[in-house]
Each structure stands twice: as C-alpha cells, then as structure tokens.
Length: 294
Ligand SMILES: [Zn+2]
Image: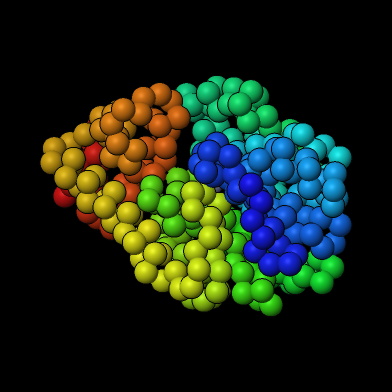
C-alpha cells in the first residue's frame, strides 16, 4: 500500500505490516525516482519503477530486512553511508558486522543470505557522510548518521516537508536492536535522543506503525526503557552464575516459544552487550564460562 506523505514523498508500506522480514520504504518522486530501503513490497516497487522510474536505491543500513528485494534490481545504483557501504559490498564484511564470522553461527547466516535474503554484493556508487545535504530534483534531504543500530545507519530529514525517516530507530514495542558487532547501547541511546530532538512534524519508521505525528519524545523514552527492562531481567536471572547457553535459553529478550538459531543469535547479540557493560562497570564478572553479579 502507498501512502502520500507529501507531494513528492511516498511511503510504501511493507508486507506483513512492515514486520520482519519486511520493512517500510520511502519513494522520492524527484530526481528520477529514489527508493529508500528495499524490503517493503515488491509489487509496489515494480509498479513505481515502471510508472515513475527508479534511479537509485538508498539503503539506510545493511540489514537483511532492508535489502530483501535488492537482488531484483541489479541494474539500479545503490547508495548508502560511508560506514555501512563495505557491508553491502562484501558478504565477509556483512558476516563480520553481524559478529558471526568464524563462529558456529556462520553457516546458518551464510545459508540465510544465500536463500531467504539473497545477498548479492553491490558496488555502492554514492556514499554519504553525516549531515550531507542532498537534492533530489526539488526535494532536499539531510543525511543523518545515527550509530548504535549499525555504525552508519542513515536517517533522512526533509526540513521543508517536516518529515524525518528514522528507519530502525523504530519505536516498536520489541525495543531497540544494538546487537551488531559494532552496535552499542550508549550510542543507540544518544542517537535516539538526537533524533527526537530534531522535532520533526512527521516521524516515519521502518517497522509496524509507520507514521508518528508530532513530538516523539515520550515514545522514545518508552522505547529506550526496554533496554533497562532487559538489563533488570538479566540481573534477576543472574541470581546464581549462569553459562551463555543458560542465558540464551531463558529468552529474556524474545520471550518463550521462540526456538531456533535466529533467536539464539538475537538473545546473545543483545544480552552480550549488557554483560559487556556490566563487566566494564565492575558489576558482573565471568569465571569458568559462567556469568555472575558482584
Ligand atoms: Zn536494522
């Protein structure tokens, strides 16, 4: 489904309500047609390409639910941030960013990127730096790098239209993702606060309810409080020393009834960041493969 955000900015709502493995896209009608992210709805993307053109696909970051349909458009230019471009150009770099290169999880991810989310290395023709201004025909966007989710995660601010695309700072009930190898809790918090402070009239995100009108300060606070809840649950579970396997099996992040290697990965990717912080602050330690509170 297409929703008109302004005369020249369209929202392509992702299939399944923009839930993983999908994400919402923007389509900028100016400049020959620019698609922002490529995991929404293949039928709508193809239709817009045929009717209005597709000059480039701008990826907010390198995650699979954002590049999902990119392999369908091998002839279209790819744009991304300076920091995230290498992961779109090389599967080895991508696997390293996920933190799975050389681990037991690598075969699962290699298979995921071969079949379910076909990854084809792409040359990133245009690379953006933080606060770079871009004109697509009559539309001006400011590229805002928001690290924490990925190091070069791009948000797009359209000052004249009062629209901010926050992409995966998505205000969802699930909460923030900071589990990539170069991701981090502190950076995620700072980026989310910075995005809320922009004070855009219309805030658009990649998953679930796409459009949030007016101030998002309170929604960002609720969203970031999920980080504290995860850490509290982890502390409660560490009432005695626990192994990585026990922590993963507890499903603190995803809840029970979510078996399989994807959720195993996600639990440890996120909770590992909490443990890293707790150990760094002297609140926890690891001994003989068991994590414990001090
Ligand atoms: Zn993402």
